[in-house]
Length: 50
Image 1 (cartoon, helix red, strand yellow):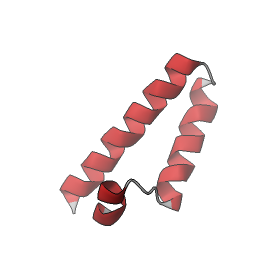
Image 2: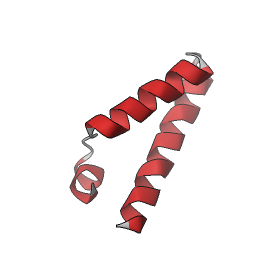
Image 3: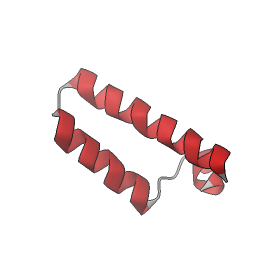
Image 4: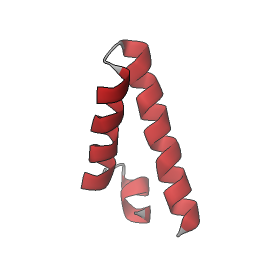
């Protein structure tokens, strides 16, 4: 997880979460940005909990 965070790579799990978020909130530009921010926040929480 830490390696993918620093290298900018996303894991399959992160991709799955992002796809689910996008499906839930729609696909407008603002909503996509919000989903990406949530995904980044999720990554940081995962990194801190390791």
